Length: 517
Image (cartoon, rainbow, N blue to C red; front, side, top):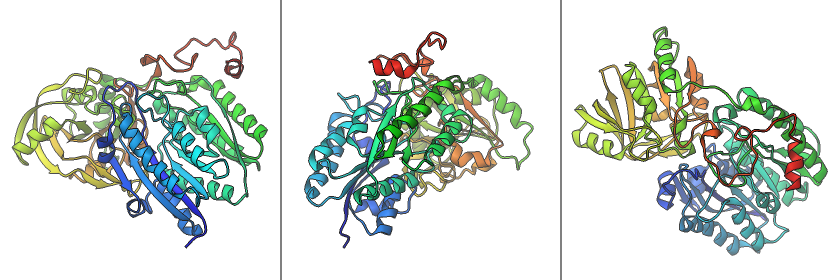
């Protein structure tokens, strides 16, 4: 048995505070809820932060205490009893092993908002710190979309964030987090952090780290990490669907024993982002224009060109969207797209009607638009053919979350309109269709479609971009609208670009205003 003991806890949720439906334990159970030794059985060799941590621990012969691994599809605030339950699983493990622990690794998100709080991660780390004291290092891995609080920076030894969006480096982030933790445990490094917050709110598609301004920001971050004293340069564009004080861009930098070095790099990169702020605002087509463009482009496609892949950004379940938005699907049907696919519509009523009708039967349904009035009206009198019904179980085979299980509940392939019309995946559960296996598990080969629409912002790029002839993000309405100016914020730090008028000629350097506060 190893002489070193590390406790691992995974509790992750990206909270959209504008969503009216809260998130409870049942929502976590529908996506991921594992306990104790079930965790390595399920997550070993997966592209997840916990999977990466397990890799390093097994290679270094470190014993892990697994507490909980829980994650829910993004949605409304996490109910207090749900938050307390999962935090309790981690805290009970810390208390039980506190005299033997050499380190704590937490795989969190960074944008969790529990009922009655502005921050879900900071208070958890505070409670753990109170139990283990200052001598046991705590390292926290985080999603790139975290809204990072001072409390989290102050109480953790190091924060280690994803570097890619789409998040194809979740496993590597877990490995890096565990390496930083073990080096701290062994006295090889003494982490210190500094955070800066440029007041810039980036549109969702322009947070893509594969191209554009975010790719350039990430390149600079990696260059800064070549300095001997710099351990990690974290870049968080933030999650602007959370109306909390910490929302927005943040740059927490981890240095080895050198607080001035961390501050210098954090400030320089934050000022670079501020100077590039206009580049994080773009112009994207709305549904009528986007579908018309796709229809025109599809007419010139050869069979081997690959589909035109489109993203229904405003209703992305990965950001808390209702997942039954209809504005894009309505245009697809009205404009008569053929050989097209749409994933997904969360509509348990239609699923039940299809199951009652049975595979091979024609059916007329009212689909979508049933959760709220933010994502489009229901589409009435949709004539469809029930082509397949599945249990909605599949495993990611693409580069993001590889090996992770997915649970759609009962899922239906409903062919809508004409016989060669639009194939719609209708499901009982909300799930971002970021992995193309969602199509294959129900009998659709996505590579052979002419037009393919997924409810996503950027994650779809990881698995779909290689097969696509063209990629088009759609500026659709909903709880995950790409433009931060469409949200009515009450609690965020102000001013913020572009929701406030910030005249660069008259406006003093942003960090002077932050420090004055």
